[in-house]
Length: 167
Length: 286
Ligand SMILES: Cc1cc2nc3c(=O)[nH]c(=O)nc-3n(C[C@H](O)[C@H](O)[C@H](O)COP(=O)(O)OP(=O)(O)OC[C@H]3O[C@@H](n4cnc5c(N)ncnc54)[C@H](O)[C@@H]3O)c2cc1C
Ligand code: FES
Ligand code: FES
Image 1: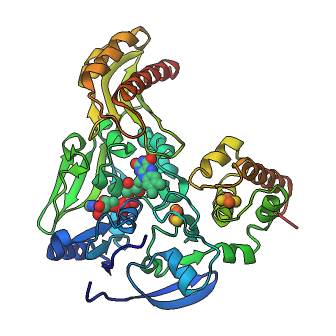
Image 2: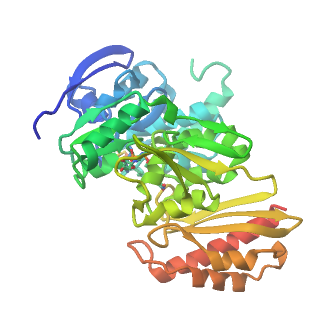
Image 3: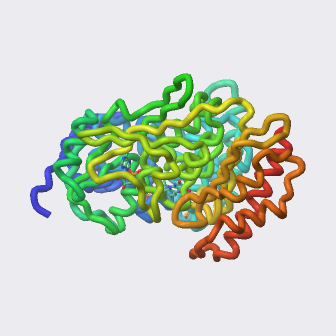
């Protein structure tokens, strides 16, 4: 099609200001991966089913494949790289590692961001609640049980420690 | 897959949206939460030349309460309805429907206006709005009108919405504390679209049922109001309801279509199971 107007966006990605011109059809996850070289968010189904592309936008985890880069204008975007560097998911990462809750790792960034959102909202989720919250994130390797174990462990640890999560 | 190229505009006023819509006609699509539109674009099932993003129009967001109604802006996201104390207090049916809709990340973006405009036969909100006898408010550059939910849903993915209109709000009457709400569905996995679902709303005062609304979804092309079954319940004492008779009436009311996940016979079986659950739940709720 002719006459496609590029869209100018100003956004904050992992704490850094980003100004860019993007094609309207560019998805947020492709923008992060291909333009900013933040390849931690993965692209699986591209129609909202698998959760591999999970990204936090203005405090909520969303599907990076169902949001346009142009819609991130004015938004605060945190990808797994930012969450990881800031230590927000450090205890989850450790628990996933120790419990073998990842194999190929394709789903892991989405699993971490989504379980982090759950634990922010609910201090003591039951296993059923963890399962339900992660129901939109596919894992083709682990069979989920280890992932639920890891998230449960972190929930219990966080509830047990008086200061914010970890030392 | 990646979508075909399109242009993108994000007006900050309703007038701006409606004028763009009028100028561009059928060649444009409204972009609300994007949770249904973006998948269809990514799969190239459609290729509009312009997306009109309505996420910048403040007046489309939010929930307000008047003496008789609760008004929900069309851009109100599922996650907000799920957390809203106004909704859980005044429209518990909508609150109870939320966990059934997709997954948290999708509820963080998806909107009530988008759900109604799309009119997926398996979606929860169209059925809830019918059970609550709510209204859909639609606006074009020339007029604003309200249509009752039962007349809004026309056929498979087909509504009363015209190409030059957008949904601006939803209005739901306020019901008193004696109303009982129930929603349940059967699906393959949590968060999947239902194979059969039921939204049930009725007054139960001193155990006597009145004003019952029984609406099934995912059984036919649009939400089905089970009028024979509703008549069976009118004036009945909830503990004396004959399930067999009621299930028979549901059988009369429905003409299910079979799909990939469930045959017509199975859907009818599920519908009868769901109405049983609704009555059982009504009995135990006091
Ligand atoms: C994996 C997955 C699972 C899902 N499961 C469920 C489920 O179980 N139940 C369920 O109900 N939904 C489900 N959904 C869909 C979800 O609820 C969508 O959010 C919703 O159907 C559409 O809302 P939206 O705001 O995202 O609309 P969009 O995707 O932005 O738009 C959908 C359509 O409506 C039009 N539209 C949007 N808003 C307006 C408006 N205000 N006026 C006029 N037209 C408008 C658009 O032009 C488009 O044609 C699922 C989605 C995914 C990706
Ligand atoms: S790539 Fe976004 S949900 Fe699968
Ligand atoms: S670890 Fe491979 S998909 Fe989850």
